[in-house]
Length: 501
Image (tube, one colour):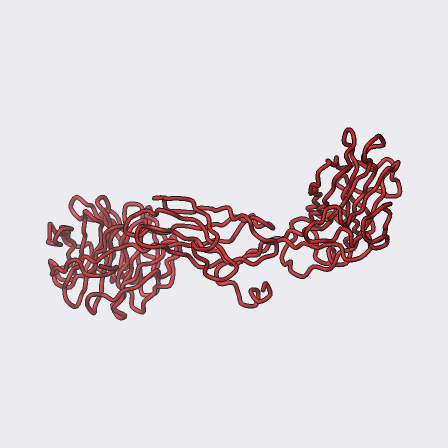
C-alpha cells in the first residue's frame, strides 16, 4: 500500500457529500441533500447519528473526539458544533467569502476558500496564516496539529501540505472525479467524492520529511549543522540521524557523517561537523535511517571559512640576529613553509639583552568571502635547553602604520622592556597564536582591503636564558589565518555558487 490508496469505499449516508473529517476514533460528515451533518463509524463509515446543519450550503466539516468545525459556502460562515448533539456552539467569519472546506482538531483549524488554504485561530476564527491553494478549484481542507490535507474537484487531486509553510509535500489522484472533502490525523485519512456519493478511508502512510537550515558557528575546521525532522515514516521513529557532508553535491552516509542515534522525537537537531579543511567548500545534508531506508534533505553549501596566508616578502624590519637558511632581508623564506621543517630553516635570537624582531609581508587573499570574524596569527616556537623558561617571544601585527600585540599598540624601538604580550616558550616545538577580532587600528571589523593592502605580521625573539645551556629562542613557521563567515542555504543562487568554486 502507498499514500492515497483506498482502504475502504462506502456509500455516503446521504447523497451529495460535501465534507468529511475527524480522526482515528471519530468521523464527521456533511451533505447538501437535506442539509445534514452526521457522525459515522470509523470501522465501516456507517451512519451513527445525524442532525440539521446550521445553514443550507454545508461545504466542510472536521474535528476530533472533542471538537467539530463546520463551514457553509453560501452564508460565508464557519462554526463550532457540539459533539453531544451536533448543534451550533458559535459562529464566525472566514478570511474570505465562500469557504470551501474546514477541519482540524481541538487546537488547530485548517480551511480553504477559492484562492487560499489557511489556518484559523481556534479562539475567534481569525486568520493565523495562509498560502496559495495548490489546485484551481479547492474543495476541502483538514488534518490535525501534525498533518494538513487539501483537495481540488477540478484537478481531481489530493495533497498533503507541509505544516510549516503549507507548501505541497506530495500529491495523489482522487479515487473518483469529484473530490469534495479531506480530513484525518497523524494515522488516518478520510475523503469524500461528490459525484459518486462515496466516502473513503485512504492509506495515510506518512512521508519521511527532513529539512536543513543554514550552517552556524562556521570556522576553519569546525561548523554546526542544523536540521529538522518534520515527519517520520510508518514506524514513527528512526534508528539513526545526523548530517553527512562531502566536497561534491548530494553527500550520503558513505561520506563523512555525524551519528546522533535513534530518536522518536520530531523537531530540530544540531550536529558538530569536525576535521574540516580550511577554505574548502562543502555540501551538507541531513539524513535519517529507519528500518526501511535512509532519507536525505536538500543540500546546503558552505565554506570551512578560513584562508591561510604565509609570508611572501620582507616587511618593514629584518632585525633578528641569526638564521638557518636565508639571511636578511629574506628571513621570511625561513618561516613560510606549509609543513614545518623544524630546525632546517628558522630564525633565532640569543644570547641578547633584549628583543629583536622581524616583520613580513603577506600576499593578498584569494579564497575568502563574506564577513571577517577574526585575524589569527600563528607562530611555531621553541627555546633551548636551559634552566627555568622565560618570556622569550611575541607575536604581533602592523596595520595602519602602528604595531600591535596581545596587549595593544607599542613602539618596537623601545625593545627593553617589551610591552607585555610575551609568550613563555617551552623546549618543544609548539604552535602559539594571537587573535584580533577587530582591526585594532580602526576599532572596526576587518576588511579584505586591510588584509590585502595594509597588514604585516611579525615575531619578536630574545634570549631564552642568560645562564648555562642553550640560551636561544627559535621560530620555524609563521602564518596568518583569516577566519570569515560564509554559509549558503539550499537553492544557493548560481552566481554566488560559481564565485565560491
